[in-house]
Length: 223
Image 1 (cartoon, rainbow, N blue to C red):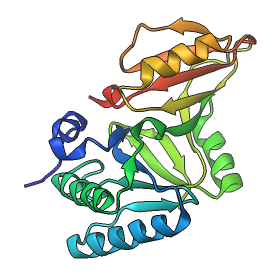
Image 2 (image 1 turned 30 degrees about the vertical axis):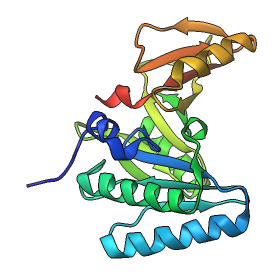
Image 3 (image 1 turned 60 degrees about the vertical axis):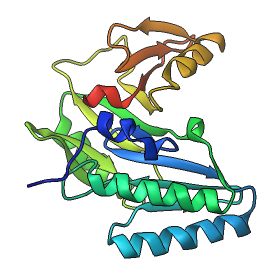
C-alpha cells in the first residue's frame, strides 16, 4: 500500500494552488516582505511539519520563504505532501503572506558523456554532491545533487559519440507548467532562438546567439 500520487493529482487538488510541481517535488514561494514575517512563517511551518512527521526543505531569505516538499520513501509526491501543502498555505494566509508561484524554478546542468561513470566520479568528487539513480531502469544514469539543495544538480546523459560541433553541456530550467511558454517567449524576445518544440509541453529547447542550448522543462516531462 502506498500513498504516492502523480504530479497531475497534486496539481488538481484545490488546496495546492500556491504550489507548483518541478520534477518530483512541489515548491511554493511566499513573498513575506520582511525577515521578521518570514521567521514567523518558518516557525509555523516547523510546528506543522513536526505534527505531521513530514519535513519539507525551507529556504528563508530577507523578503521570501521558499518551501519544497516531497516524500523520500516513494521517490516523489504523496498524499502527505498535499496535506502539508494545504496547511502551510493556510498558515501563510493567516499571516497575510501571499504566494508567488511564478517565481519558483529549478536548474540542472546536463552533460553529454561517452564515459559517463568516469566523468560522473570526477564531478561528484569536485562538487561534493551525492549521487542518486535518475532512472530506475538505467543504473548508469545518475543525478548528482547538493546535500543541502543550494547548488544546481548535475545530470549525465549517455552519448554514443563525441559531438565536436555542439556544446556537450546544456542547462535544464524547470519551471511551473503554467509559466513555461512565457519563459520560452521571454528567452526568444531576449535574442534567443527556438531549436525545437517537438516535445512541448514536456520541454522546449532554446539557444542563445552562439548556439548554447537550454531546455525549459515542466513536470509533464515525467507524466
